[in-house]
Length: 344
Image (cartoon, rainbow, N blue to C red; front, top):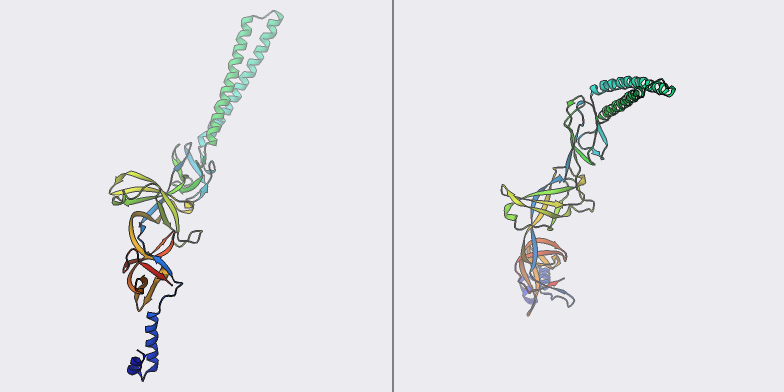
């Protein structure tokens, strides 16, 4: 062959040398220490990318307990609150007038109580001297008891008014994040009207899938959740892992609903959408380690150990696959199960 090369390329020794190196490179046998990889069918899970919506398990309204005018609102959308935290104040001017009336009523009854006590003491003294009647003493004692009870009732009525005044303070019904505040300071509201909405429950993802996937998803299936736009997860990867916790049995408008539990959704906005990859099927394929693929002039080859020795086989590559065993390269054509692939 050397003589043939020199005969055809005798005037171009550099080209002849390059041709010899190329021929020699393609025919060099694999060393005895080369590792073998046995090609066997492997099963992978097919996934589908859908959008999941962040929702809260519970959304609790903060309501006014009395009617009146909103004097102040201390929170706005997006604020975090704790249970029983004051978030606003409702004032009813009539309560102040009713308190003044209650105080005047109590003063009146206390004066009657003092007079009834005096009458009772006088009746007791007269009866002790033998110049008074027992019936007079009984009447005085009854009148005094009635006035004492009236004073107690008036004090209780005033306590009710004081409690109503304290209930003008609007409190957060639970710990969480304020979603909406539909009122402003100066608004007039009735008792029971909504002042704010607080997302207090555990956050989760709700998925809406085409009904053709209803039989392919089940409780406990793992899913991959994409990172928020412009952000990465704390672990430095672009996705986090969750699991399907509920698949609803009713299909509505051709969609099946599923809930996904994910750690760390507290930083998301309620109703924010994020990408989710869910398992929707399985398929078998052949794959080899990426190191086994040799690319030459745009064509991919794999070295296979045969009875006649190592041979290069042209292959068509598919997608890259990551699993527990590491990264593999899918082979669409060129190999069959049982082939022994030589690794460099």
